[in-house]
Image (tube, rainbow, N blue to C red):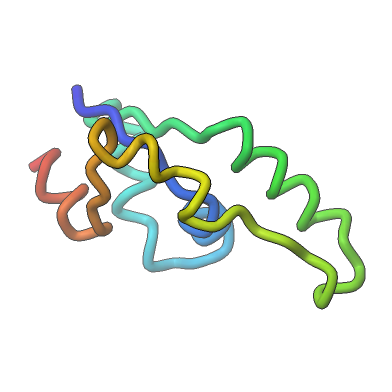
Length: 84
């Protein structure tokens, strides 16, 4: 089984966007494990509670520079190809 770390914007999209059904189905069928960081979960909770969208702050890629050699970023199409 493949394990992927899902970025905050993609976790939010899975919840609201029909184009992520294939990814959600792959996770549900246990072909892939989707992980979300504590930061992602915190940001989703914060977004849900925010009323003033101008004050929202999302973690940028600068925070993850030390992990670049450990985590390989892939797009949705690549992730789905890995489970087929």
